[in-house]
Length: 249
Image (tube, rainbow, N blue to C red):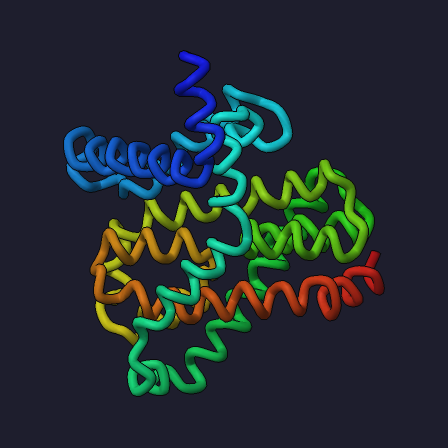
């Protein structure tokens, strides 16, 4: 690469990151349309491409370790991520959200504790016996955001936190890929069911991509409860769930 081009890309890192992500998304949606006929959503392909690029580069921050792509670290940081989540949730009509009522709250709590429980069982099955590791991996099964937040709060090792992130990514990709095939049988075709779905699944990226492939009009409703899921998970993981696991293990 020319030194001049490299310097320009590095100096305008955030713009470079937007261009890279834009090209990746364009390729992902082209591949979704042409190679899978829409069966595999473009967001799922984009995430897979990102994981492959990060693995190919290696290091601690994936492609952000390359000086010319350092802006990806800022673009993928918490600030812009949270802005995107909040902006999406603002598309919700409050009257529709209120219709979910008790069912929405129950789905939220049910989805959270099932995720913590299943993730904890998997951690136990793979030989983890301490409350910190079991809680962290269980939190990762909730979402790949709740996992590292919980792990950092209770003192989990970097290896366990990495496993929690991996668990959350696997869940997100499965939700993206399988939901369009299962949407009709489970009645995922209205705002109320989308909010229940978001509360049960929890993973923001997975839920939004899945609903975008099913019916784009449902995205804000699923995003709203999925956002609550993440916040509640970050609150309960290092506190109530950890105390329960510590009492058991």
